[in-house]
Image (cartoon, rainbow, N blue to C red):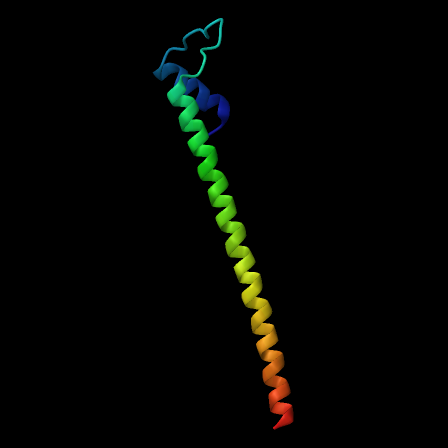
Length: 76
């Protein structure tokens, strides 16, 4: 649906109210929710970075294991 059609449809559903002249300051609970959301996002990023590091370690160890297995086969 084109944006113009969507805007027209939404404007028919709810009348547009004028914007307040002064911005409404955020409430303390809203600030708390924002901090909590940012902390959760940071935690998810750290978790994904940790998982990526573990996967790199696994790949390195698997490559090393293959190399050692090949050397062992060569020696036998």
